Length: 307
Ligand code: GLV
Image (tube, rainbow, N blue to C red; front, side, top):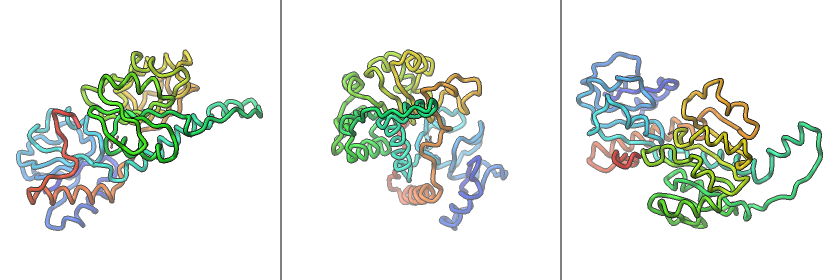
């Protein structure tokens, strides 16, 4: 049996999965099931205890790209394979989101917005794409596609990853030693790293200070990678000119949080790259069939690596 948890789209996923896998019984939370009968979980942020008693669980398919929360759970046997979505339509959405932020900065929309409030008609010298230096943290399925597409649009793109990745038009910066050089040449820093022990709190004052004065930050990775107090300090001092933020340490962002009303912040409620039901289900079905044939699934998470 496949047991599904999606707070918002349960029925839709149940229908799509059942259609694609008629030989399996697909049940959807909160429908009560016999935990020991569950062979596969298909989930996004299920409630605590969800996996309790699932002694026959063969794999968990995550309805998203990030697996930080699922790996932290104490009700899931660490021996059970966890499989995340790889791209499944998210890279294109992420590119759109990042491009929006890049254009906001490069075409000075923040400045023109302020001018409009004062009915001020004043052109400011433009910055060419080729002079706009973008640094992308994380060159996985999503970050890699974003970096490559921005480079193809003519931006001066550099990418940073643990092990390095050669991508057409993207300058490659690798590991701890490569980070300061990437930061020093990033007018716009884009965080698309997975949340792991190594990236938690990475974007603190130490790192943000190394960006050129007047740089911008786009964070569509995970909130806990950013020290929000340090970020606010950098925005207040003008060291950073602008931040486009999709993810936060606490979500939903608390109504009293100073980021809501900061004039240099544009924020969105974790929507940069949303899971698209059809490609997600197609990938899960293909992976489930691969597992049943003893073949390696796409997007298998390595627990020790954290993604
Ligand atoms: C969204 O944040 C995801 O991890 O898919």
